[in-house]
Length: 181
Image (tube, rainbow, N blue to C red):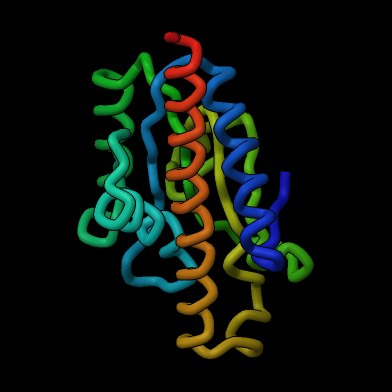
């Protein structure tokens, strides 16, 4: 499913609702793996989203990856080992940026399947639910956008995703509370 930043409020509600349904369907508490660098603008979507989830929205779910502890390379490999041993009974939701086509630039994709993370040598699919966005179009981005403009767009995406996750988790809590009554 794709969501654009145009008509932000309506699309964010739909994103939250769709994500909440996926989480409820899997019936396991979610954790978040926010993949990406804090040094490369086009690859910072996951780290920014993790930062917002941990420090702004302060969600109860475990969040791996933010601006101070980005999930890339060896760090990511070690985190995956930890998740596999300590969080094996959780729904893993992966947030990452991707390289893609110009017509998908800055659209948010939500899928009920894992994600192939490029920096992993094993080409292994990670996670149960994936949230991603094309933040780089090979050969075109540097010509079209200045770095400051890219930062604004990636931050808007991270905020869209983080607020959507926050709202989805609240929806899940409300559903669980209503079933307990």
